[in-house]
Amino acid sequence: MWTHGWRDRVWSDLDRPWDLIVIGGGITGAGILREAARAGLRALLVEQHDFASGTSSRSSKLVHGGLRYLKQGEIRLTFESVRERERLLREGRGLVSSLGFLMPTYAGDRPPAWVFGLGLMVYDILAMKFNHRRYDALDMRDLCPGLAETGLQGGYRYFDALTDDARLVLRVLREAVAGGAVALNYARVVGLLRDRSGQVRGVALQDVAAAGRSRTAEAQAAAVINATGAWADEVRAHADRRRPAQRLRPLRGSHLILPAGRVPLRRAVTFQHPSDRRPVFALPWEGVTLFGTTDVDHGRKVETDPGITSPEVDYLLAGLAYAFPLLKLGPDDVLATLSGVRPVVDTGKADPSKESREHVLWRDAGMVTVTGGKLTTFRLMAHEALLGIRARLPGRPRFDAGRSMLDPIPEAAPAAAGLDPATRLRLAGRYGADMPALLEAARPGELGRVGDSVTVWAELRWAARAEGVVHLDDLLLRRVRLGLLLPRGGQDYLNDIRAIAQPELGWDDARWQQEAAAYVRLWRASYSLPEENA
Ligand SMILES: Cc1cc2nc3c(=O)[nH]c(=O)nc-3n(C[C@H](O)[C@H](O)[C@H](O)COP(=O)(O)OP(=O)(O)OC[C@H]3O[C@@H](n4cnc5c(N)ncnc54)[C@H](O)[C@@H]3O)c2cc1C
Image (cartoon, rainbow, N blue to C red; front, side, top):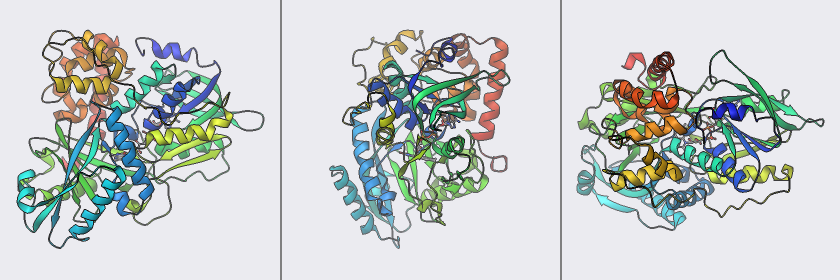
């Protein structure tokens, strides 16, 4: 699957008849493809950039009910989300794991601490899992050294879950492809095909893998689903040029990534930002600390690699200084930044954070658009979208909402010397059925970690060989997350990475140098601090 030459093979086969075309290779599109394959449909997914390169690799990595949504009265969204969290925790061993959250409370908090306690009780009731508890100030200091102590009254602990968002997309996509579906990256939809009655029955595609050399193709299908997240309005505009297409309000959210040594956390910490009382999170993730987010109008055309702005950096650093004053964190502590654009339906609220995060289904000339929502609720979104298009599909297939989204992970894998049980489980969760092949492909020494990260070298070999990498940033930012975990995006390791990846990718020296230079430029522009904060 996705080995050398696979994209050419898919391109040459695009003109066969499809039952379903899914536009967008984020978590929503991946979920739809998975369920379509399971129902026996001939299904094709096309993605304009890399798989998961949109919002789905830029989330806060939480599989969560969202306490904030509860506070805003979005009970249905919270209920659905906690149920999905529990399901993903069961199905996604090694990829989705439970994470304790501490919520410190201070004298003069608005709302007062007991309101949070009440909220957590409702949160637990929705999940039918009673595990939040209250701590006094002494306990909180022990549980989270470095926390601001003035006025600290105590706090709460509750549980949500954490994942690697890009790997979740990849796992779902690869299981869909193993089940008979086809997924193609760097294939942009540049137009929609219509039948005589004006209904959307296919897509016009452009290959955007390489600048300059560009092939085109048309693919016909009984039904088309638009799962392009924050880009959904752009694709809808192809369906109906008369209608003012803007129904989304793209909201940017940015994170700072800091070395775990500077913000040592065993659990996540959440608190209200001092400037606007929005909840923010500091999370231990993949050996670093992720802190976010902001929530601001993006205010420009949605691009694949949005970057953090200076006011966002200042906002986030002010939040860290408020919660962890003794750590004296500043721009020099920032390893990397990560920004994404939320697909949020525009209802014209003055405060972006008050806009609902529920998902929506829209129809334009027979095409269904599914957007909004959350990473956590992707399975529900997939089912709703498929039910929305079912009448157009041959044989009106049944979609079984009760089945697992993820396949079971391999329990029997080749014994790999030196691989500790935690790493083994981590690899099984991230690579699913491919984990035994990944271990077999590993050369001596490649089960060791890359620098201080949790990534092992063998992941690079496997991803370069078999995971559809087209550009170096696909490999370093999404197949593995080294671009977010290592200082300077891992530039100091590029020679070692090259020794493994270049032969697997079949690139000559000139191509490697070009890709490495492009990666460094991209990392500086979109994953580091803006110049004035650096
Ligand atoms: C800062 C931030 C933090 C978040 N944190 C969380 C969290 O912790 N937990 C949670 O549950 N949710 C979270 N979310 C929300 C979640 O990330 C998104 O709801 C989800 O990733 C959206 O997935 P998607 O597949 O709909 O969109 P995307 O992942 O954006 O996928 C859409 C894809 O469509 C492609 N596309 C666009 N136009 C075309 C075209 N013309 N042709 C082909 N392809 C096209 C894009 O390239 C893109 O890859 C967060 C979002 C943000 C921004």
